[in-house]
Length: 238
Image (tube, rainbow, N blue to C red; front, side, top):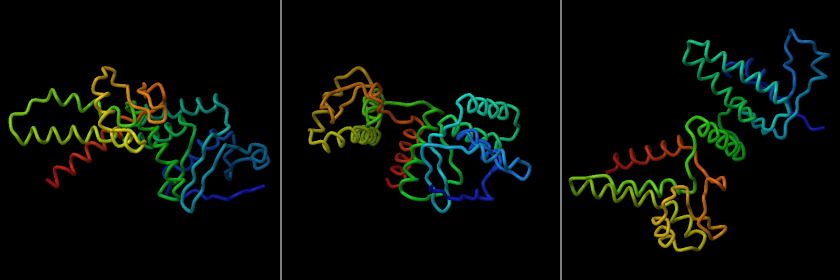
């Protein structure tokens, strides 16, 4: 049997509560000075995957009872409503999102490339749960570029800025198509004719498809942040 001892960081916020979340998620038992050690041996939890590095632990696919997980989530929701501290509410909301995603992260501060991919994926899920999703693969950005045609500008500089932004918004779709050996400009022209903003080009199929139905999407919150960062950088360097 493979095993690894992991000591939660003493700097981890709300460590005891997180350990209780972990027990519920995995169907285990929190062992403390007050707990019954014999009972604890009979309540070992399990999960599909655990990724551990020197300073972080990611638990995925806990085998805990869905009923118990939902009860725990309801307790956290009640605690959020009762709390008057913005800081405490933020911590509770993060724990609630982790449980809702069926995963748990303890002291995530970097780690291996695999861990970073897992953490990035979990963060994307959290962002999607908070603000929703939009068509992925650059499709939403591409169709957003058409909306800029409605923007009225009164000076040459403004018109050039709009044109540059439109080109940048179209670039992801064109780049993905070109990487698949397809003419990106031809794909762009075809998409400009589409009225459905969920339609994009799938290079694997060589077809124009509804990307949302295929599960290709991006969290709205992250896309807005990336656009905001890009525009700020453009303004600073211009």
